[in-house]
Image (cartoon, rainbow, N blue to C red; front, side, top):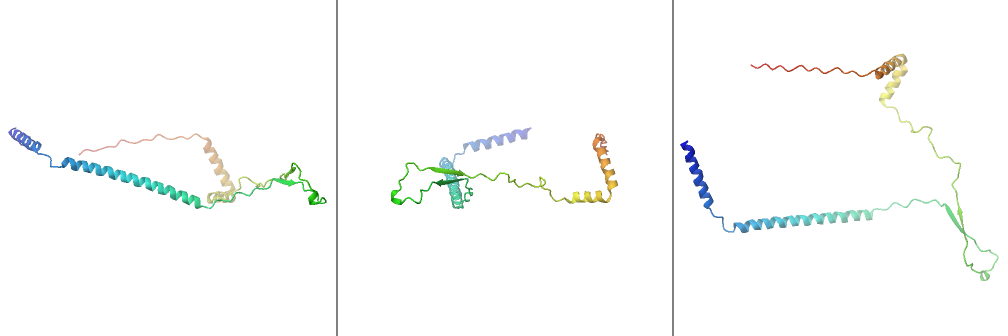
Length: 176
């Protein structure tokens, strides 16, 4: 018990000596300088991040502006405009310009009755897979066996599924 008391006195005296120590001169100023330096580094990093985002935006805009645009789809002429031409027999000096030019719009209608292209079968058939080819060759070679196999499969598909309960024996630990 006495060694505990002596240990306590040693710890108390060491702590008393520790608390008497004075801070080094300029410690407060050095800590504040470090804080200011860290803040300025964050501001510089933020500035660089903004600059990089702006440069990337300008680069993307420049790329899109230089890309060739797809030509406008060709429009089929659905309405033809024809103006009434003056008769050729009247000399140029005797012609009088009409107050209102009459315009006749002629519409062209799509040919009706022409059927749209259609496939014989929709959707169009795809090539058979290896499994489908194997099944086809099995049915062609062994039609009776295939019929029996499909009948058995049909019978199984109509029966309810029964799952036996899982039986796990307890683990035996032999203690030495």
